[in-house]
Length: 106
Image (cartoon, rainbow, N blue to C red; front, top):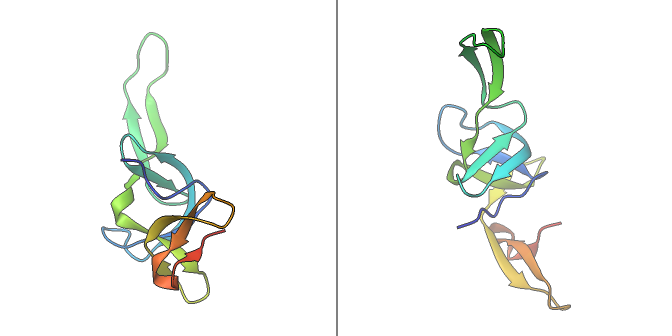
């Protein structure tokens, strides 16, 4: 199943070691169900030297499972919401915030 979080959304981590942190989504991989958040998940990988590259340390970003993040609908209060889908008056499918009485997102 694809994720309901899109690139550019402001999300809050709701579980795990980064619980409570908020950030902007930079990349989403629906197949692995991962969300990459700006400033979170930075790790250092120690690379082995090979014939084609020099060994050493390489900074990488690790994704967070999409089930561990929630969309922020009110930046000042930090209020989060689940996301649903509905058809609007034009017949287009739009995302709606469940905790905001099914208000359309963006």
